Length: 314
Ligand SMILES: [Zn+2]
Image (cartoon, rainbow, N blue to C red):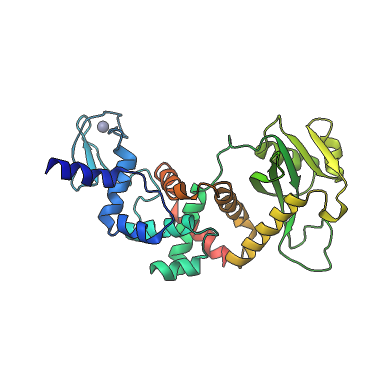
């Protein structure tokens, strides 16, 4: 009997690694199995009261509560996480995170809503939370040889060719160039304009100070060359930075395919989502766990703000 219990609890304790829907369904089949996973994430290494820091607890009012022995604070497993006060069943939330992380390209909220059985609006609001969890850590800067360019997104009209920003959004996209020519990690960030100062801060945000940056022959970079490790090459219709331009096309195609409508204020979130998935393309099995872990350590999102964003995006 003891042996059985230990095997049984091990099944709960182990990190879920996988992109297979059947395996996912075996592991997470009701709300309780999801809550146990969160309990392990939060208190697996020991309890610590979020009010007073005391490490001993009583049983809580349900299996996913703990009550502090010192101050008596009763805390749910979802307190201080994005899952707090969520009306949707936890199993549906898990299914959405799984679909957004396990699928190579993610999923639109219309598809997501119909697959999991929630309204598109609910799916949209929840996906925003997942995208925040996918935000790149600042210390994950690109290193070595890095190529950078500033593509425009949306508003494809013949009138505004060149670098005009009317009805278009600008991005700064940078890729690591590995010694064998392949692409390493990437970073993408929306930028407000092409001024030297804007480019400088965006580059510094995404790229390590010691990296060698290559970009095309754009005016703003001439000024930056004096202060940063940048070399410029003539663009020759995109040939000089071939791998980089391939990545730009892929990002644009993804944006068009998955997010038919992408309002400018959400471009940050979409870029974060794309980069997170791309940089983990060789380690996709742990993305679900990583995102869930981040969501457990995030301050809950103010729901009214998300709702306002939603109305503006449609
Ligand atoms: Zn306490």
